[in-house]
Length: 112
Length: 116
Image 1: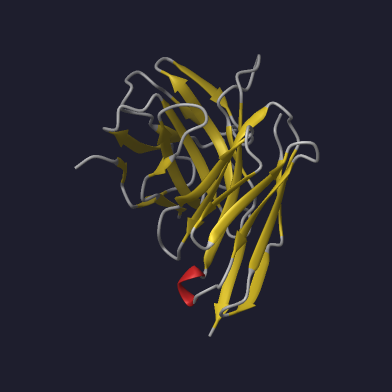
Image 2 (image 1 turned 180 degrees about the vertical axis):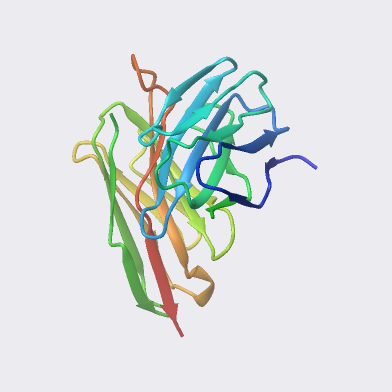
């Protein structure tokens, strides 16, 4: 079953802790993206990567970090420096620039 | 960098009427403009897209128009049905530039409500 998978679906974090959200795809896509979705604010780009071992900051990268060691995987770490991390996080992938992006089911992160 | 603005933020239409959502983009290097639909509790899914070498594209009840000179593009839904109720996002993708190639930038979304 091909697709893009995010895990976990729900995640709870204590203040001051780092947490890593997983994103895996078996679509052989080069490009991968992380978005944050808050009510009324659409999809805001956190980080994106066009090729392995390379990634770029999006509009709201502060307090987040990523890695792209494998083509299939693009994990997002929400660090304690992120002031308001409670949100819905969506990962996406595409063949490359100018092609359809496929989204994962999302991870809802709650800071408790 | 690219900035995509989307209007309106909410849109209520009567079943059978048409709905129009408009987006503007800032970077003339952008060449790919997709539209995504996100139903409640689900992931966004592509419904239609357009590239900068065409001005209009249709797929059944939905169509997208692009005005490169004015840097805006619009989504048109005709004969709306209750199942069209969702949040719609426009997006723009940049060509390779020095520092932001491949970026897929979304608008803030439009909540469409179709009432029977």
